[in-house]
Amino acid sequence: MTDHQAWTRKDLITIEDLSREELEAIFSMAAAFKETLTRSQKKLPSLRGKTIVNLFLEPSTRTRVAFEIASKRLSADVVTITSQASSLVKGETLRDTALNIQSLNADLLVIRHSAPGSPLYLSRLLRIPVINAGDGAHEHPTQALLDTFTLREKLGNLQGKKVTILGDILFSRVARSNIWALRKLGADVTLAGPATLVPKTFESLGVTVLHDLKSALADADAIMLLRIQHERQSAIHFPSLGEYTSMFGLNKRRAAWLKPDAIIMHPGPINRGVEIDSDLADSDRSVILEQVTNGIVCRMAVLLLCASTQAISQQPDTA
Ligand code: CP
Image 1 (tube, rainbow, N blue to C red):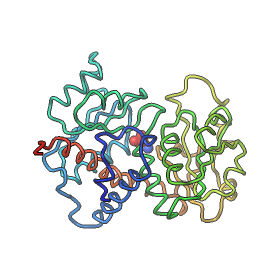
Image 2: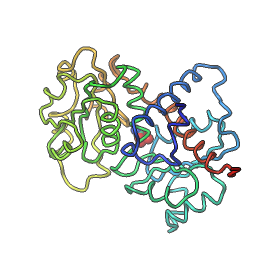
Image 3: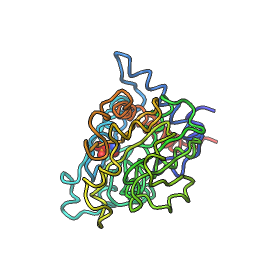
Image 4: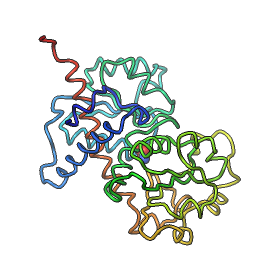
């Protein structure tokens, strides 16, 4: 089965929705694109003549720039709109903004929004494909794709591999998307951190919850760190950042609890000296910047697969 045959979706809204075959289709196409990154001519003609609009209504560096570069590598025209530079600040609704973008002949919309469900809402409203670039604490599907793509490069098949996610799980869309992706790929997932940010209820997703850091690190093949997402917290979940760091921050002493070949990951942005010490973030076992680079090819694959489904659905019926 080709990557295009395995993928029949107009939109990418969640990892929860995807089958293992769909994940494999994305990885297979992303791996093929990765080979093109080493060429002097990196541009491919696949989306020439298409216009991609990035509607980023929350701050972003990695996701926004990676989607822009991915679009350009596929020869699409790309327009980025941020909240302050849009008519949303004049009272326009998200619905009207999206319908206007579609009427301006956009072929695909990438959206980041603080409200969970907004990408799904737009995908039902619009003819054009919609890609979720992060919706509140719900999902961040392309982050999980680039994380699991990187893990497969480093660890091979993820069946039975142990991945620990440490930090603010409760408010993390990255954690939710990664839990879905890792479980579908057969990995064993442990969530770790303070009980207020890592409640036992997550065990219903087929993961282990541990509040003892040493046990959570002991047999991990990879540790994925998360920052404290203050922007989504409306109550106090720990006394102070200093106290969080003193109990759950990854430092040299605690990293010695990891297996010698365990890798360190972080979706970014990093808060150095809070969830991770600077020297560990920059160490040989950190793959943080490789994750960022893999974000380009994973997003190229998602853009092309969603755009191709749309192109097929618009072909005239000649039967
Ligand atoms: N990982 C991530 O989503 O980073 P940005 O917020 O910079 O896009």
